[in-house]
Image (cartoon, rainbow, N blue to C red; front, side, top):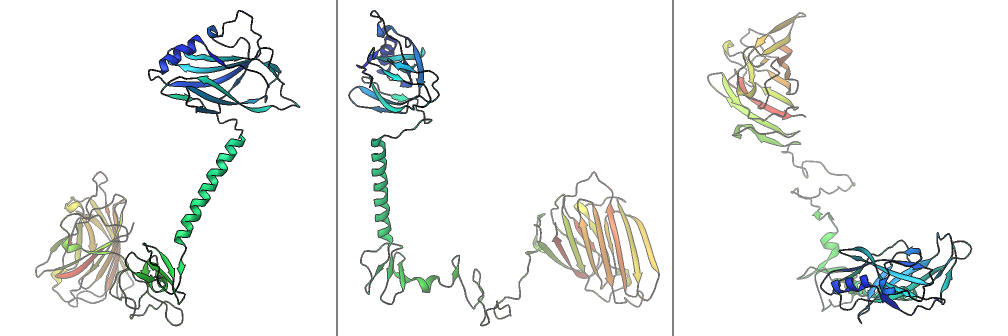
Length: 433
């Protein structure tokens, strides 16, 4: 092995060390190896680089020894080395905040050097430790490379000890949660403590009392218990045949599959969610009656409007025309109405088209109307019918038609107000998309 007598600080290294005593961070950057034979008048303190550098090596580890020195570890390898050389010089480099990277310290072996062969048949891979002075430097670091990792016996021993300690800790933790067994409950308890009693039932301590795990959790899914009595957050059990019992005994009948709100109680425009609906009831002795729907419309929303006119016998002057005023506003002749009338007992069809100042739905008292209102296309596709003659004037009839809003420049932000020319009925508005 090469005989290096120790490291010598260069002049620039001494100056950097002086700065480090004032708090400047002393950062070691790399190691260089060289093969020069120094002349008798070579002053190592004046060197700014190795006389004949041959190989740059990264620092693998740094450790402050505590006696004013630091140990730098590097891996000497000939991987990629094209030409062998005698390792006579070792240079330690550091970062000076004013000068940049400098030669901090140097070691010399002279004619007691080792030969490092080129990369080939002979592979060289040695861990080398070199020490240098840092005095009382407050902050000492190194640029550490993880590209070459070679574990020493000490590294392996330290890792093995760490793994043994971890395994021992885990074993201790596992032993603390291992359920105890016996006819008497354990005296040392904590929340979550497990105990197998004399009947082989697993018990757990909830912080106050022991609980039977089977009794407490056997009938739960995600913490919700099964019960024969319907209640919120309760699982409906299977019947004796293993089938979910959906009879009125276990399943509530007075429920809706979608969320319904009372439209009459709305005080401002409400944005219906998809699948949500609002219901309105109205009655008056002197039609028309105006029902504010108070639904904020989505610019791409589709809504279903169902109108149930439950007044059957009424004067003919109360014919069941219904009008929807978008944005609660009248737009003069801005709507185009087109519909076909199918009359009972007749094979002829009546085709009607005209302009309107609002969305128009047409049918007679006692009828039912459904309309798909597409806000994006500004169109209402409606179907209405009545199967009961009114005062003998009209047979049962059916109407299919559309009302289209022609004003594309006005935003439709509120579904609007429904004008009902009837003494009573129900309106249902449901958000479809």
